[in-house]
Amino acid sequence: MIGNADSVPGFRERLATLIGGVDPFAWAKRVGIPSSTFDRIWNLGTTPKAPHLIRIAEACGVSVDWLLTGRAAAAPPSDDLVTIPWLGPPGAGAPVARLALHRDWLRRVGCADAAAVAMAVAGGDGMAPTICEGDLLLVDRGAAEFRDDGLYLLALEGSFCVRRVQFLTSGALAVSADNPAYARETLAAEEAAALACLGRVRWSGRTR
Image 1 (cartoon, helix red, strand yellow):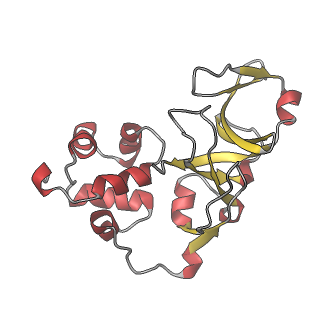
Image 2 (cartoon, rainbow, N blue to C red):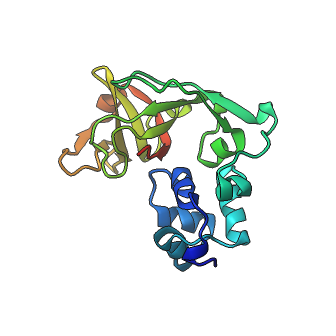
């Protein structure tokens, strides 16, 4: 492991962008990086050796060169890239920039149909600290019905909100926010069906 003095400038920031809003140590476990190793990467700013760099690059669909330098590698064939539309406006409106994401990465985060994916911007503080206002959201519009426990993007009164949905043994749905200031709601199946669900949130990324 490279010491702090030899750490690569910007590496941790690029890693944080890839991890997004999920728990970083849970992410590292899924990727196959031991917690002690990841603690040095995440908290001490050290740069991982080649085997772990390769694991991160393969898990996130980026190049090792980009991880280390921030420079884009040669673009993959255009068929492998998907231009992602924006859902808007969530208040201030969607960013002007357009994103192109790799199909393999979309599949890895759970988006089975790349054509059904959209980006949105989180509003409000209901899901803080998991998702904060202004964070980017990758929304799987092919999962616009409540079928599994997870985070979903809902349309409410002209704006967006993310809520955590959990199926209860009674058949009802628990709809909650991670911010404890917001009360949990329990909805019967017919009440849940009346919600305007825009899709399942597969990934979130901090923008500041």
